[in-house]
Length: 273
Image 1 (cartoon, rainbow, N blue to C red):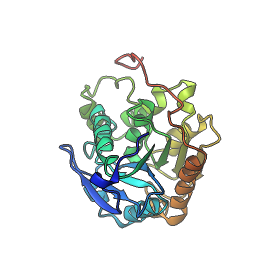
Image 2: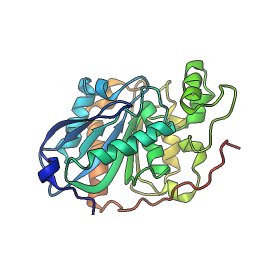
Image 3: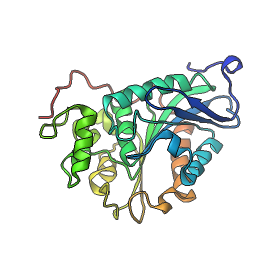
Image 4: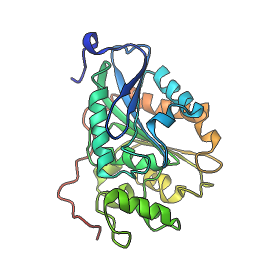
């Protein structure tokens, strides 16, 4: 059991800052845990930070809806504004999660939520078994790193090369791309909620979230088609958030798995073939 004692470490509602050298994270707690709460870790879009996320009204409304549903929300800094799911961001997520679950009555179930670039660390945390993940929520999310690497924006390629420490003219390291590097059936068994728009010209839905959803082998997964541009205002409205909450609540009610239905990648080659 992963329950923590509230007497010494606190279990009340409110916002707690989780300090880290690579950027502070923020833990938002429900008013009460009955008797314990699951954790939802939120990974941000390109150019954002955890502290900026805490100032955005549309994100605050989403976070509040999650906490009202009984989920503790950990707003991650992802080790930087342009980390692209690099190993440092996964290490960061592991460390802040360990610190966060000591501050409330944790029921052992962790979910991840990534929007835009945040889809990479949110999905890789599960696929690479950084910690057990019971389900992933994706909004306009990047899960196809090769698509960004080979895209028309040279800025993205330079950022990714810097994040992973590879030459711009080289290849991506194996294991960095959720869509292209993880094909075994156990990865397809992970429940995913995918929301996105065919109108998105920044992160092409058909090559990212939708493509990942189409590989899903579990009836727990869900696809929600939206309208409008990348991270459009309607993508954060109450209807979309309520659909996410319903997905998470269903996994909790069905008895979210104490171990994820997939295994860690072993002895992966250094470069994609």
